[in-house]
Length: 238
Image 1 (cartoon, rainbow, N blue to C red):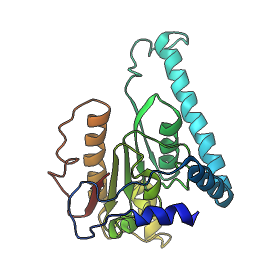
Image 2: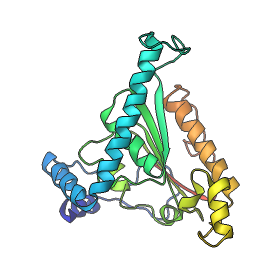
Image 3: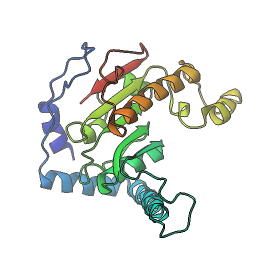
């Protein structure tokens, strides 16, 4: 496992002090043997992760299949002739983020995906998503310009938007206001130093711009081009 990753790091061109949003990493062109080796090792280390993710992706593809049947009229539905299935995107949080990333790598109907703090555990080395992919990382991803999961996406997702949010935790995703806040009050979870409302504002700002550009074709998105910023965000485009 570490041999292809070590070669990848040797090709790395870093600028830790840079605030630009352009590429700062030379991508590694993995050989097919590298991909097979990495895929095999990660499957041994995270067997249940891979198994469950593929089940969830099968569910997602079933939903797309049913949507196509409803749109065509094959299945009776009020949605007949009302769905635009040429512009499909997906978003997921935590394990859901892992699932939509894998979905985009094996299903051409999905044109762009975004994940909120969900790793891939090696699933994108062999089945690579070559589509637009946006990932949000918690505070750890803000402090570090590169983390393990980034290696699966840099140079392969086209483009790869990488967002680390200062002071955020995994609990900021999903039903934070209803779930994580209650856990924090009874001492079951440590709140992040960044307000959940600000984190949601960051999510919304980047996600709307991402899907507007890559699903709706609205190219002019200042926040994706680095013209607008949140000081709590470490934003990179590869």
